[in-house]
Image 1 (cartoon, one colour):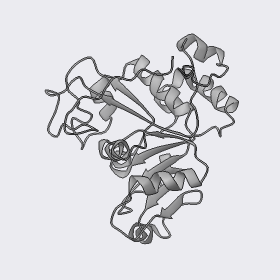
Image 2 (cartoon, helix red, strand yellow):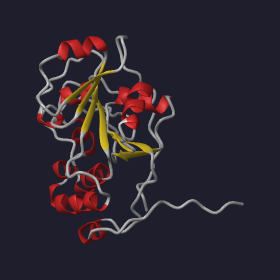
Image 3 (tube, helix red, strand yellow):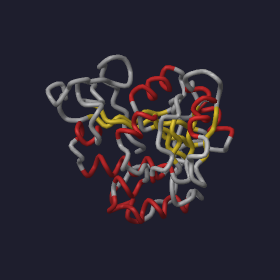
Image 4 (cartoon, one colour):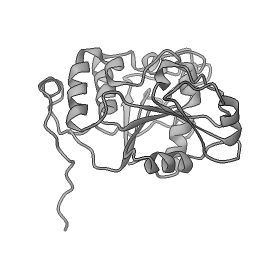
Length: 242
């Protein structure tokens, strides 16, 4: 029998050691997924409303700390255009989701030799996104040739518009392949359900970190309940490192 696999471990900043006493570290390259689901597998109870994660999880501090920690490890955060439109005022950075550990997240990124801010990559086949949103500063829009034409001249300096084909949509393979070619080895995907479902179906996700809400969401504003796998099937519970 082979030796049991162990995760790479890193020296933890004191504040993170206080909040998380388990192992820390990921092997590279890796694409990992983070999303919140209710006990009945719902990840979006009202797609037109912002703050889907908070609607389901209740915004508990421990949940938000874990979200920030997973972001702090990432070379890039990958999301779908629908998630960006629904969360237009959000920043996909560790300190934004859990400010009390902001300095510790920054120290962790310094140790990992990563830039202070995690860049955001958005997948949009149509290019129907606002490239001036603060979340996209220094980020990427992965789109089609048609989407790139739509965005021509609109993206501010520092925002890259990348055409990845002449079709109507961007495949998960094309998005991941481009990010890998640009040197992004640790990729966190944070939604939405459609993008995560594609990445799971394509076998790109190495680790899943679903945060499971303590109750069902079927009765909460569930006009269009949906999940990332198939219908409302509940995801398996995967523990964070340690």
